[in-house]
Length: 139
Image (tube, rainbow, N blue to C red):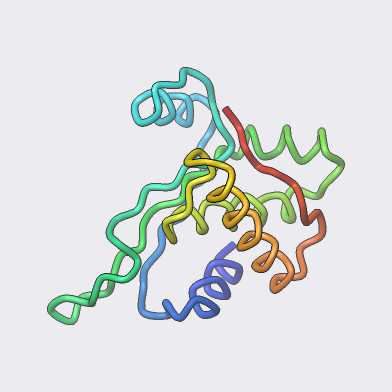
């Protein structure tokens, strides 16, 4: 996942940004999803932006793009259900979370969702990840 994240950061000109990736279980993901989205079920991925992706670096400190939290339990289940390898599916979820950190939100209408899907496809093509076109939208 580290190499995937580094590739995404480099491809978007954000080599000097920091990005946190957390793998959690369904119990912890349910807590986060409940606290931040009011949904009392686990989801596959959540993104927490730290600042605007276009903000300038301050005081020589690295820019913190944000956190991507992935439920490993849900990812394993969904990968099995879709016949994908766990590694490929984790890359799909990481890309989905990363695109959210760039400011896209599929819940803001069809046009925004189409733009988000196009960016995800571009990144998955760049990474040569099989399973393009998957929609990693959990509830």
